[in-house]
Length: 313
Ligand code: AMP
Image 1 (cartoon, rainbow, N blue to C red):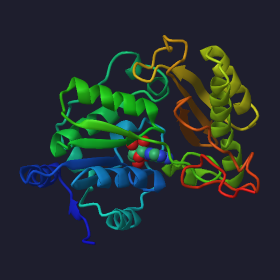
Image 2 (image 1 turned 90 degrees about the vertical axis):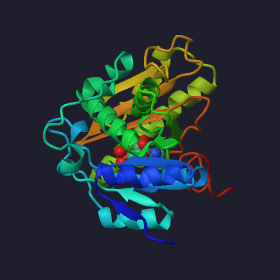
Image 3 (image 1 turned 135 degrees about the vertical axis):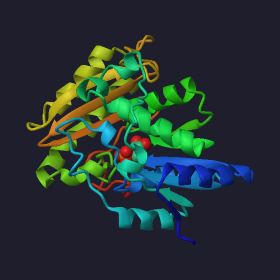
Image 4 (image 1 turned 180 degrees about the vertical axis):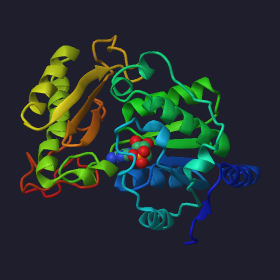
């Protein structure tokens, strides 16, 4: 398989993408901050299946990090990332420098309004979604892909991107892919490398809490307050985990669900040590995660989906 073309400037991404579209091919874009793992890989593979050409962007975007966040220590593993892109048959990788993305004089910022742009992640990470919306708009404008791929794990980001893609007539279809979990149930994240073994064990309270709330939903519980309580109680069992929020929201607006949680998302953000983790479940749509093999005959789980026990007795 040919190695992907490396593109370093927005202008190069534009030219390359123009050629793809001019030859009648569909283009898929997968925006990432690198340190690629199986979650990113699932997005890339989906794009590979659905589009004639695939471009992955790797850019640790300073505009979406607040003061005191982990911009400087964010894992950077470019060589391994390029190898993974090659293995997956990616056609081009866009790896701009900060200067190439934000040359001196750039002052335009894209902001998504409404509750969506103001609650939960927006409250806890002021300026974060402005940075995300700006960089995603720049990527969509330069590449003009038929489809762009995002992960459900970052649920509010998905809603922000869907909103801006529609409001700004980008013409791109925003494809949201399911959360990929490690065998122990923790959602894969580039930030998981920060966790000590003990912190990781405690972090499993997050998928466990989401699972408990989702199972209550499956048993007929529709009160957002009750679902929040159920999740919060499980989180409380991990002594060092400090929740930023446990929320039950409408997936589009991020307001309280108006239909009594017939269609809702349950979201958790929590800190442990210096690491901040987020996770989400869509009751009725996502299988409750199997955490640390709990409930499996031999304590084993299916690593791919983490939705089932791999060894059946
Ligand atoms: P990031 O590099 O963390 O900015 O993530 C790039 C894209 O990969 C985003 O759309 C994320 O939502 C998605 N992503 C990250 N982790 C996962 C995961 N565990 N499962 C599925 N998608 C993910």
